Amino acid sequence: MKKLFLIITFFCMGAIMQANAQNQSSNGKILVAYFSWGGTTRSLAEQIHGKTGGDLFEIKTVTAYSSNYNTVLDQAQNEKRQNSRPPLATHVENIAQYDIVFIGFPNWWADMPMAVYSFLEEYDFSGKRIVPFCTHGGSGFSGTIRTLRNKLTNSTLLEGFDVSGKASQSNVDRWLRKIGVIN
Image (cartoon, rainbow, N blue to C red; front, side):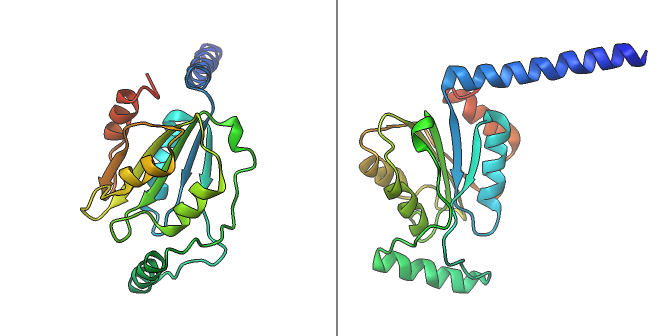
């Protein structure tokens, strides 16, 4: 009985690995890049990564943001007013290897955090499929989709996913199927 169980387990694991490899090869190599302050965007990025595979990459700034919510609100507003580009502490080694790039962020003051602008301006996304995802407190994507279209003119922008609070895995799966990233 143990032997049969092991055979079935190995067969199932092989089938899952093969399905993930097929997803990867039919869609190209995937990068799930995200900026997260409180962990909500990180959680969504991990859900996406769990279904799509590829590489998970956290956009981090050289100077960390305060852990105090009100201080971060002030920081974010000041950065936006100054149109700043905070230097990044993390960098993608070879962006050219990716065909699909998910870009996740919280909505800060009806915009992307300025660290995401730093990320977008550091790399050439020409020819890539870009998939935005956003966490927010009720304001959705605001004007960020228009901003992404303007910044990434040589890329294909796929339909994004935004959520207030935490996303259910079934909603994430439905969206990924709708945009053709998973079967």
